[in-house]
Length: 120
Length: 108
Image 1 (cartoon, one colour):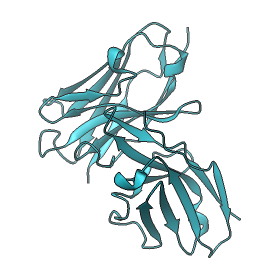
Image 2 (image 1 turned 90 degrees about the vertical axis):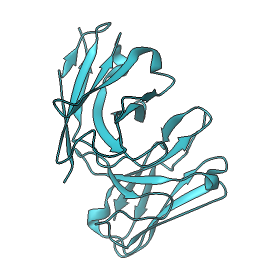
Image 3 (image 1 turned 45 degrees about the horizontal axis):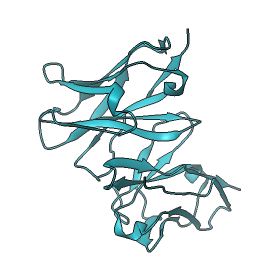
């Protein structure tokens, strides 16, 4: 059974960079034609898709976040990562990693989520 | 950008039918996916491509999509169905996934 698990710092200072990792177990991130991505959830904005990466390394991002976001694959560790630059209080949220089969297809499964606070 | 709208809340009695709507301009032309989220947990897919159920989801859950409204229907509601429900579509004009604001279903 495929499982995803987020990890990373719970607290980030304003203007700094947020880095999160998603570790995948029960399957390989390069096995099959899947996208791997990130979604966040906050009381203010609800669920918000951030971006995704294809198993071959191609990426697509939400236009509103594209200038600050990078998603990478680490095939040696069966992980993928999220980097978000220049964070503000508006970036505080629970961050989830996910898998989906193709653009427009549903997100399934999701990781358990990791809460990130932005504060000095 | 494409917007999908859900009612914030819905109350239903045990054994009754809950109909959760997701409105959007010509949403009937898009594939709609639905997620259930219980407190402190990650969302779980309960319906995809309008009316397909993932394995393990009870057949009390069904979906439809036409015109400007997609609907997730929960028949014979039980206490365990109490949760937030979110719809999601792909906005091909802006190349982004879009979520509805969510509907909290309360079982009386």
